[in-house]
Length: 338
Image (cartoon, rainbow, N blue to C red; front, side, top):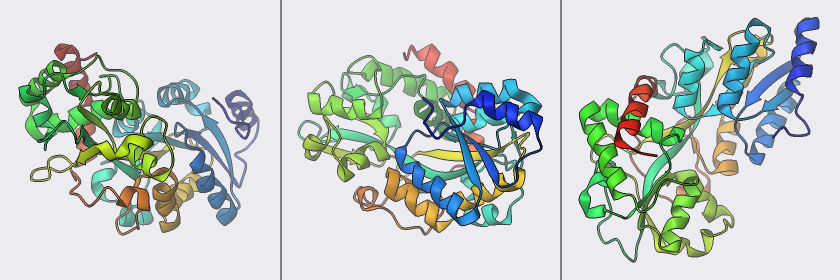
């Protein structure tokens, strides 16, 4: 849903088409739907004097819109969630390379595109949650989720979920197609119910007793520490968590990231915005405002996310993982993962 502050796409496109690119503006296409991001935008506007015009929607819709708009697109920035969508945008030809010494210095190479078309600015660990009362020995790796010992115990999202697509793509990257296919079949066999709902719903499944083990992103659980989340916060003490694969590749990380639009009318402002997202101020707000891990090393964590403890993240190059996302979808389909 478009917010009141958003300039409608049609009006914005018409304005850009009939006049030169307005100095001091930035046209942001965003699929991040968090109210806390308001602070990111207002701080950037205050620091630079650049006005942000926003179009908000689902990632696939925004990518399709930018593709349809082509050279006349008013978009300067695409801001979205997960490697799979950033890769989709790149493959659609709607992003362009960015040469920035600031971004190269601050954003680790493994969370940026190999051609500098997108950069990760915040992260979420995809981890295993379990019922501390019923599960004495929870899975310690992603591969162990397919162990028959956990038959009928697992709640996890659908195969169409972008977080799961990227997770499986990372398993392909680390372990190969055959082992990834066996894993997907094993997880399907171990499901307590058909995939349904979001990550928070998987954790609520533990609370309700529908399942003993769930897979979800760290920030959904951390949010229940920072504020009340219905059906989760009051029962949080019964849930334990595991950062998977700590003796191997480490915990898989999802991204929020952004890139400069291929036909950006305000390209210099767009690069400034990306560089701002890598600043300590913005990085701290990603953590404090939305319970995410900063993308830039050395930035302090919000108490809610720090409460989950230290862990080893998977530092595989996500640009390489993105190449295996189409293969991951084939594996999901063959495994009968709804």
